[in-house]
Amino acid sequence: MATRKAPKEATKKAAKKTYPTESGKRSTTPPSRRWSAKVKTDSTKPGPGLFKKSAKAIAAGLAKKSVSPKGPGQGMQMLSFYENRAGKNLSPERKHTLENAKDILREKEGEVSKKSSGKKSSAKKAPGRKPSAKKSPEKTK
Image 1: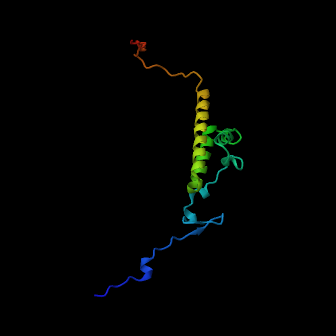
Image 2: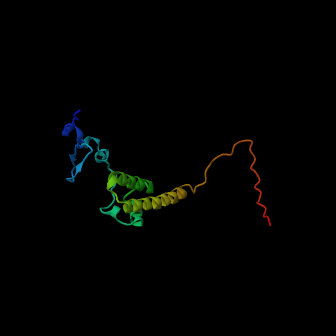
Image 3: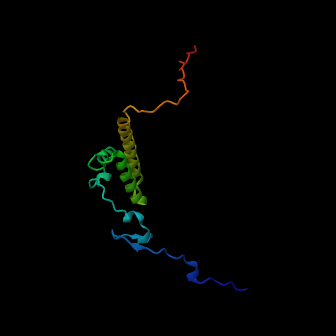
């Protein structure tokens, strides 16, 4: 019995189609599916080269009122957008630096929310409830 060989075209894998990008590189994602390229915003923008600096410099730059007038939370959004937009092109070191910058921004955001919540709240106590007496923990020897 003679064995048949499959035609060469059938054994080759089909190459993925690539599309040109604005930077001159090729991408397997068609332009219609690049969501981040379509984002248009009127918000302020961080200075050029900010995301190439240290974590402290990134956090300080994004926390400025001139860059994020709504507070550090808006800076966090810009940082997340940059990270998502860069995608696979970010090196592990840069990802780590950006995560550290996010942690610093979270701390600053916590400070801002503490300052704004420093005002006395007018919350009423539930009727019929008595405040519980706190017991001090006994020390054992």
